Image 1: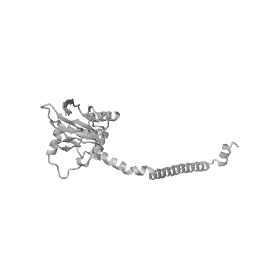
Image 2: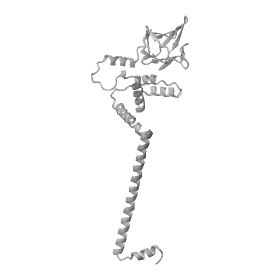
Image 3: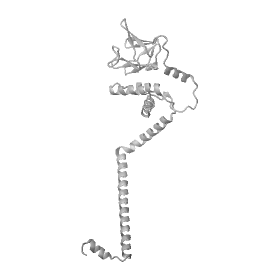
Length: 256
């Protein structure tokens, strides 16, 4: 959607709005392009690949008689929404972004029958988790991650839009060993979480403290036993050499 625009027709008037690089929001309060009557709903218009995403709970946009939740955009597409007609345009010669071309190539290529990793059809939850793993591992596109960090600070975070943006710009192979290994550790943490919280967690921590206390007492007892053994050996050697234990005790008690 680089250098693109939308023409908004409403009430016999037409106005053109330029689209920003990355994300442009059209709709209610907080949107860069205000659409009267949209309420809190918004359309998120992305530039690479060119897409429109409906964000809200009200009326979805209609293209060619079909209501959309999310779809690719092509020059000449017309979206009907809240009594407005939004026509998407792009300068002639401005080809599809490279990321979109790669997606088309991947779709056209044959897919092995036993291809590992989750399919995109597994839904919104997996896309959110995978995008978060990429950011945590430092293999996500830095510009996309930085932009969404600023969106969080500005109170404009959209989990689904963030996941789509990060995955479109930085998605590694589905079986990337770094992601697989981190996902395994995350699963282990989730499995153990119930054991660390609530009554079971308190009982587990109490048992750990008891075991730790017993270990401390045993260690102190062994140290004392070793000291007594060494003292007994020293006294035996002194007596063997003719020293009087009674005289030694008198010296210690200041009686000699």
